[in-house]
Length: 103
Image 1 (cartoon, rainbow, N blue to C red):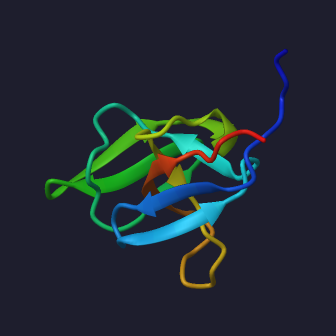
Image 2 (cartoon, rainbow, N blue to C red):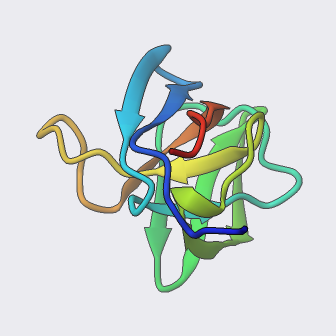
């Protein structure tokens, strides 16, 4: 029997700042373009487009919004943290470390 039970917390690793976080499955995320691999600093979201610096060049890309519940282990996504250390348009490249087992 299939159920739609969500995992309690999802473990992610902030690729740029080397920090681990646990976030709820309903946390907002942005899927990354295929060519976004290792940006320097945060990714900025403005007018539906992301801008970032990678390889010494400024780049622009499109993204799609979703929630962490739709992510897969190993997937890289953009997350925004409300920790007071980042601006509201700053998103950070993170990798989904693991999804706890569904209860």
